[in-house]
Figure (cartoon, chains in turn brown, purple):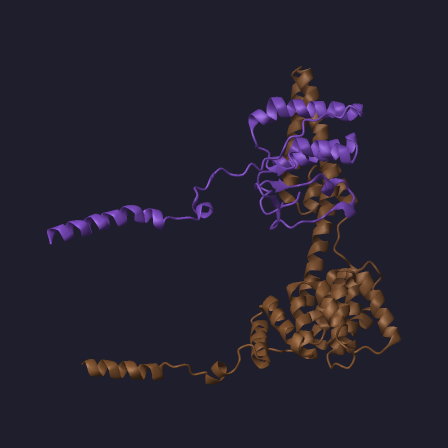
Length: 289
Length: 157
């Protein structure tokens, strides 16, 4: 029994021994191993640690792919300034140069400075042929949707995009062209005719009903108190009735303005979600497959 | 033998008696009693009872508001579901616009406050759960409207 136990013990050490002999024999901090680890972190979307590991490689050797990945890591982390610096540091001799320049310009758009993006794009476009020209042209055209500038011709606008995107783009174009805003003046007039109607026009149904009830109730109490000879109470309720009536006319106009701000907010959010989904129409390098 | 046994017992008792001193916890900061309180943080809107003597209109308005807060609202408790509260909304509206527009804004707010069905999922909330509804949304200047969706909790009012 004892012998059997010792035999099992001796052989178990061989059975469960370290299999990855190469990893044991190699230096864990060798260049290929650091790169392997950094790539793993990058593909696991652990961009902060991936960038740190890639920086370690850059200290040892210059590599444009690593520089590009560092820039992408900062971009994914939302550190736009650092990402922009890193993209701009990629030299013209690199195969990533044009993409990096496009990404750098896209960052201006992503930060929200649409006016600067448009002027920079036009400047670059007029001075030299741009690498990711189709993608940037699409992004430039898309930027019309986020500015107050007048839209170009519909066909010209839609043709700047890929076939698969055209339907969605056409919808955005039409939405922007005939923005479904409501009129504050109309709301005020509606509420002046029927208290609360302007609020209902602004999609504030329960507020509209409450305004109607409050104005009607205060009006009735005014009439009832004056009729009963309670003049003091009559004046109080008449003040309230006038306040509710006028306040509701004013509030209906304000509610429409908030409604318009709401749909503008939703429109911009939808545009941003679409852009994110399409990676801002720029070329994507898949480093993880 | 018995003597040895007795000495062993005494030694053991001696070691046990002092062992709590030798291996006692030294990390006092970590293990000290925590002064915990389970009271909800006081997130109630702070009253500003100050007066402005330079402007007669504002002085009159603030006097009325202070009186209302002191004699009625503070006694009644934290019951207004909005932030800023309706009385504070009135003062802020008048300060932002003028007495006429501010009064209209107040009446509109008053009607919206009466609406017990339309507030949830309509206004964003502040940390104490009140509905965030600043006067800047109602001054009829579309540029001053900063739309915040109801799902957002407003931390910096």
